[in-house]
Image 1 (cartoon, rainbow, N blue to C red):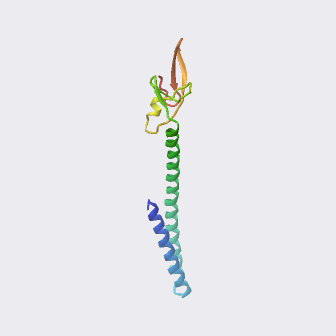
Image 2 (cartoon, helix red, strand yellow):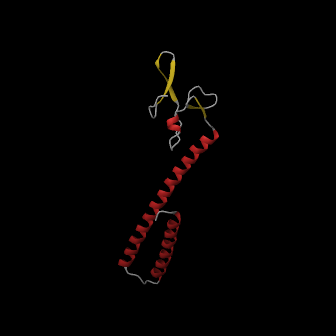
Image 3 (cartoon, rainbow, N blue to C red):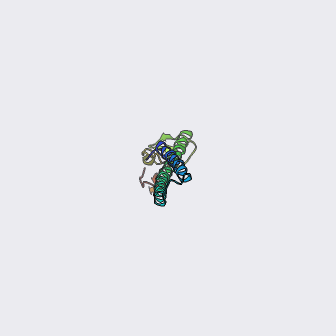
Length: 130
């Protein structure tokens, strides 16, 4: 059970089973052992369904986070200049290695001057120099 439809179907099935069982109890047509067995079966079904729902919630949260990150990239485009990505009006570039990765991370680079007068940048995340 790894999709929402299966989880809902399992819950509906559990509810039907509970109603059927309740009618047997009303008729006094059930033994104590049968009752305890049914309760343990329902408990197992309920726990499995809770796991599926928890997994779906986690997947939904991850998708929402990814969606926010992608919207951020769309709303604030970067400009390619001097082999780095720049935000319009910003003095510090973004790391091209990180930005071009599948995750499209935006990491500001740090100015780094190994020799006098030459300004290069380093990324604190991937440690690349540019």
